[in-house]
Amino acid sequence: MIDTGFLADTTMRLLGGLPLTLQLVALSILAGTALGYVLAIMRLSGWLPSSIASAYIFVFRGTPLLVQLFIIYYGLSQFEGLRHSFVWPYLRQAYWCAVLALALNTAAYSSEIIRGGLLSVSAGEVEAGRAIGMTRFTLYRRIVLPLAIRQLLPAYSNEVILMVKSTSLASTITMMEITGISAKIISSTFRPVEVFICAGAIYLMLNFLIARGFDLLERQLSPADTTRPNKHRIQGDIIA
Amino acid sequence: MPEQTATPTVALENIHKRYGAVEVLHGVSLRASEGEVVSILGSSGSGKSTLLRCINMLEVPNRGTVAVSGETIALHQPQEGAPRPANMRQVERLRSRIGMVFQSFNLWSHRTIMENIVEGPVHVQGRSRSECLAEAEALLRRVGIYEKKDQYPSQLSGGQQQRAAIARALAMRPQLMLFDEPTSALDPELVGEVLKVMRSLAEEGRTMLIVTHEIGFAREVSDRVVFLHNGLVEEDGKPSDVFENSRSDRFRKFISQER
Image 1 (cartoon, each protein chain N blue to C red):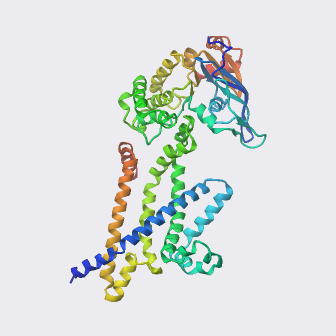
Image 2 (cartoon, rainbow over the protein chains, first blue to last red):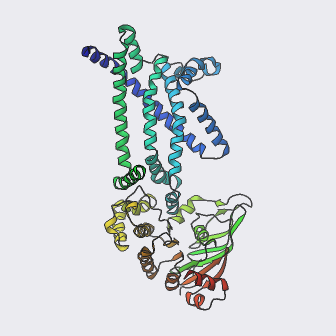
């Protein structure tokens, strides 16, 4: 028997955690992308900044997010200096620990995506911008970034979707986002399957909307007529 | 012939350019007066493209000076290490007055042809968009691709793309046009349409420096022909003199090989 009343009720309660999930995603993506951009530029710079960025990426890509989350949440209080610094009012809260862990983690992945996007910009198009007298800033804003973003969007949408799902780990450090609320409901109802199905459905809907959003953005940024023949050509090459 | 005493539009003096240990230009001097069309010929590896790119500092010479309309570009040229412009503002300002047409067109692939043309005037020169659009339409008509204005570069043939690139350069109202092998990447049947546009520019008295392998075109259109060999000027003179009475064996050999 499907208890539609219970499912509807659970879904409504879980949706109460949606704003927190969205906040965690938005803040960590924003901060993570900014840091990822800096890391990408470092990777493309001289030997020293490049090595520092590589070491960062190595560590944050090579260890589980859950471990990073626990180290930040349980571990930071051991540092005397940090406890007396201005950031402590933030870092003592599980909320900011979750944002920090998610942001540091996604920065490592996005930096590689951004680096790939920047490398895909054709040298000739950049040169045409320089030759016409563009300043570095104009060149970046008008030529490099639009071309890079168009290239990195598909990979980047993956990363955002992964981040949406990763926010569920924040429930392990007391965050009452969608997964946290699920655990709470289960502890009082003992109906894990139905509750997690509801939770899964909410994540699925959310990621569906995000994927659609990226799809539209990609279409917006790529002149339809120039990508379509390409797409057909590539499909033809692969299938034939 | 233009007056030799007037300030030259471009004056390159004793240009040396090195890549690592390899020196590709060994002290080249070249002048072009206003309204003059100068073709730079030479076999591949002779340094002719590098020389052209030194004018707008896409390549920075290790030694020597570049002056555009009498204004010398300030350079930082250390004994060791890479040379660089001392003042990017100055370089950017001069670049905006020097049109450049590339071998591989280099149109911006994310912009329509029309947007490619107005990009520089609007975002570099800060002119009003509506004024630029009107001017761009006239330029596109002139190069014969007005009907392509809302298409993207990849939808055009090579010859059409190169004509769009010429229009993009003209939209900046340049006082000097540089052409870096503008027809070398084109199918033979598309070369003519680009040369026709270039010829009309030469006829209206524009100052042009053309690196090319189109010897017939260079001979007909140029006021002067410069032949580079191994990073040095081997010939420099009027086409009639150079082509008919060249003292250089290498040049005679070069033109007989090219066609």
